[in-house]
Amino acid sequence: MDFNFTEEQQQLADALRRYLDKNYGFEARQSIVKTPEGVSADHWNAFVELGLTALPVPQAQGGFDGTPFDMLVVMQELGRALVIEPYWATVVGVEALKLAGADNAENAQLLERVASGEVKLAPAFHEPEARYDLFSLATTAKETGNGFALSGAKSVVQHGAQADFWIVPARLAGEVALFVVARDAKGVTLSDYRTIDGQRAATIRFDAVQGRRLGDAKTGAATWERIADYATFLLCAEAVGAIDALNHATVEYTKTRQQFGVPIARFQALQHRMAEMLIHGEQARSLTYLAAARYSSESPDERRRAISAAKARVGQAARYVGQQAVQLHGGMGVTNEVAAAHLFKRLAIIETTLGDVDYHLERFASLPGFAQAAA
Image (spheres, rainbow, N blue to C red):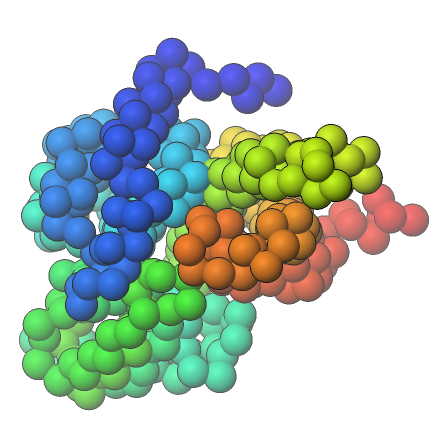
């Protein structure tokens, strides 16, 4: 399988990297983190001008109908620069609208607004005490005369407070159904906060909040799982970019840090450790690219297998590379003054988002054919 980027994809990656290198350096990023909003309207508008918000949107709604590999290219660059803007949450929301039917008039209108950068979206994956179980839903929906009323709570909704609309799963007559809920809807209680990696998250409570149902309730569970798989492989792509940046930062630091009168990069034992870090990164990249290729597979099990394999390997690589980078940086590796510490924090959060290593290894092993292959 050819995993080389097309000329257009490479041009997109190059353009985005040039912008981020020039305008989204570590100091600029830290300045944004410290603002009350935790995100930058100026950088979001720049992403709109670069076509990033329109990239995953269908052409009929003013987008570029980007493929999973197009999205992978973008997420790698955002991960490398430790970008904290609400891009991941928004494009996952776009995927939810597409799976529910982009030809639906209300969905189409919302997609057009996303493409133009007018609105942002956020999926509400987590509930208190649900851990990684997507279908452990205490949030319920009841049909009313003018739609559906949602009651319950969602926790750690990434960029929930920065989104204009949320994609919310809830139990409707015992089945999993998906809903679009506006942030300014009556009955919403929102608590916004900063997470340890500098990102923003929110706890959202619904008290008979009006929502619009997405798609068919009978297919809600399968659609929600696929949305989570899409979000997962995008996180893997972001992690690959962050691992690349952390490896590069570590090598550069060891070239300047001296011990016994020579740079520590000349010590063979440390060279071996950095080589291992590079290998972990390349293995994570390979499985992430495979996950992008398999996401659109007609076989749900093939998709699940590739996504879980990537997430498990990325999680292992993130932990290994992060720990080694901190050790090779010495005391500086745990300070807020260097990017390495923040890259490690972001990788740690990615590793525990939408299933950690153990969760995805168990999911992979539970899929049909594993027991026979292992025998």
